[in-house]
Structure formats: structure tokens, C-alpha cells
Length: 281
Image 1 (cartoon, rainbow, N blue to C red):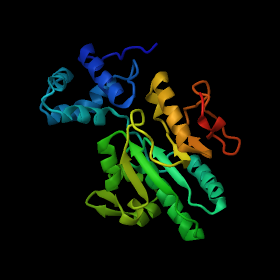
Image 2 (image 1 turned 180 degrees about the vertical axis):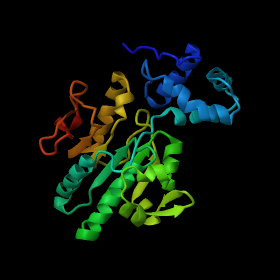
Image 3 (image 1 turned 30 degrees about the vertical axis):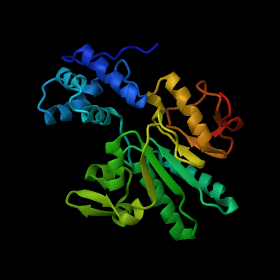
Image 4 (image 1 turned 90 degrees about the vertical axis):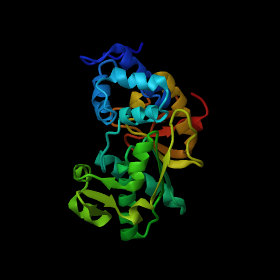
């Protein structure tokens, strides 16, 4: 049973319930019983922008329906966009091995980053494989990055990051090689951005990108979905993978006990592979 979010001090339960329901309806993500403090924190900039004092006033505007963009803006603010460059370095080392094996039959590998947030993960992959191409001549995989948030996808496409964001995971060498400075921000060079196709996609409601992939990364996304919603998402990911493809979740996530579509990989530690080609749960 899912517990109702507990409102922060000074915030009404009605406001938290409405906003939590909006987020789940649009994205499938849930706000845990003791994480509703994040609603208040995430929406404070929106309150200031609209000259509102409380979340209840924001909910009133939402329910009035006079501004159709307000729901999208709220959801963009509430979606968890925590990310960084080369997050969990071991994952990227493993992916280098996965891609090398996939390319053994002389074809270009395909990678899907599902829930890519503001783009640090797919851009990290692009840097890694571009540097490999320079060293060995091996091709750069096709990288498709999707996220439910229009704002996050726009950020990814722009390749623009603050000094704080750029320093999370990137050494100075890579910062200088792959980014230009614009004022206090760092902007990805066109050659880097061209290696990633950013697309807006709702993992729950929409179909995956066409074709099948050698790798699907969906890290720390399913963590926020209900068991019922995960049962809708797992088949999509399984269908998007090639029979010998690899599924990568976050360090604190697992498929064990949640679906029979995948099993732990015998080839790559910490990864999962389709079981029975993903035909049944």
C-alpha cells in the first residue's frame, strides 16, 4: 500500500495530494510519503515567478484551467532531475565493454538513454566514444536520449551547463576539449551535441524510439514508479532491446522480484539481459 505524502509544515494536504496526483498522471512518478518536502522546495521558484504565496494558490490556478501551460511547468519542476557527468564511473567502463562486444560483427552499436534528465549521461557517452574513435578508429554508437520533461530536453539540446554542473564529473581536460565558455556557463561544442539525438518521451505513455538497442540505460527512474506502472514500462524496455542487449539500472535498483522479463547478466556485472526475448512476464 502506498502511503499518502505528508505535507510540509504550512502546506495543506489538499495541495500536496493534487500536485502528487498531477505528477503521477503525467509521468507515472510517485512522491513518497516522506518526500513531499521536495514539492514545496521544487515549486518555490514557480511561486515567486507567479507572485504567489502558497501552493494552495498555485493549485487553484491549476484547477481553474485558464493557463494550460501551468500543468507542464509544475511537472517539469517536480520531476527529479538529479544527474552528473560520468555518474558511477564503473558503469561507463562496463558500457565500453558492452559496445565493443556489440560491434564485433562490424556494425554500429545503438544506445538508448531513457530518463536522460538534462543530458549529462548521453553527453558523457558521446565524449567517451568520440575519444575512443580518435584513439582506435572505432565508430561512435548511435545515442538516443529521452526524457519526460520538455525543459530537461531543451537543456540537453542546448548543452549549456553552469560552472557547478560542469565540474561534477568532468576533469579540466574534458571541459576544455568539449565545451566553450559563455559568460559563467559552459556550452557543449556542436560536434559533441551532434552525437546525441534528444527527444521528448513519456516512458509510461509513449512508445520507445524505433528499432532495437544494444544498451538501454534507465537509471534511477523506475525507482519513483509504482509496481503497477513498472509492469507497463518493463515490457517496453525489453522489446526495445536486442536479444543479446543489456539493460542498465541505477545502483540501488533491481529487476529481481519485480519482473520476469530480465535476468542478471552473466557477461556484464551489474547489468541485466532479456529473459526469453522479453515475450512474457
